[in-house]
Image (cartoon, rainbow, N blue to C red):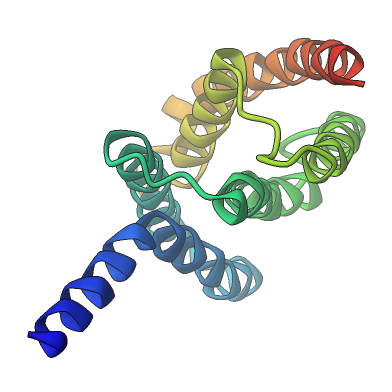
Length: 183
């Protein structure tokens, strides 16, 4: 009987950590992502970005649906999203596909918001616009690294990038307002 209770407790603990496990797995994907960008393997980058997007979706899905939100997840998940998106954007900047100044503004916003999140007990939840921003950036990366005709879709990738950039500015102002009201 004791063994069964212990086993059930351990299974529940494992299930309770599924969103965090998915987040950490996405974080570990950044290392092959960096290497794939460095050795110019866009098909592998494309695959890693797709896997990263799927794990991002499911960690949020399980956390919400199964009420498995943790303070750790509230801080590490958005940080992982930023790392996972910014690394390919850095490469796109290096390749002169996106301008440096726009990436510098995005990086500035992400660092400030991450710092604000650490000062609040359960992090600073992503707003609906923040989720759209991440979605537009994710789609832009999928388009930039997709293995099909680059010319046909490159302007669409740029469009998704700039929509994400505009949402970056809007959500930055919104997060600053939220933080101001929590002090």
